[in-house]
Image (cartoon, rainbow, N blue to C red):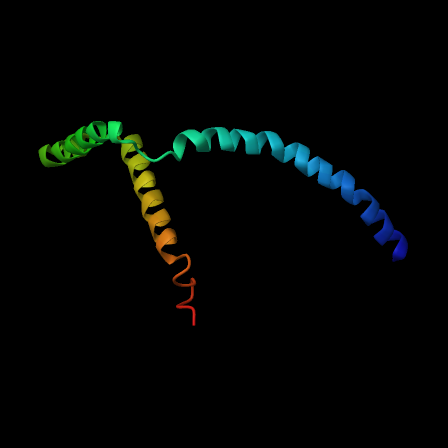
Length: 103
């Protein structure tokens, strides 16, 4: 028992170095994309946002959404589900647990 425990403890630094070597480039790539994607919109982006919303509403009113391909409709459904779930998760964290309210 003691022999296996000591061998496990001796392998610890090697395993930790392997984990760090594996995770470092992936974490750096995550940070690269996070710096670009998680930046809040600037006032210069407001006209583009308005025109995008206007196009969306115009397409909805004219029925253009009915002409979407199955692939486009599936991707739109996935994006909508993602936004709804992240909103739900953001509203629930700190307020409620999955089972009910914290006491």
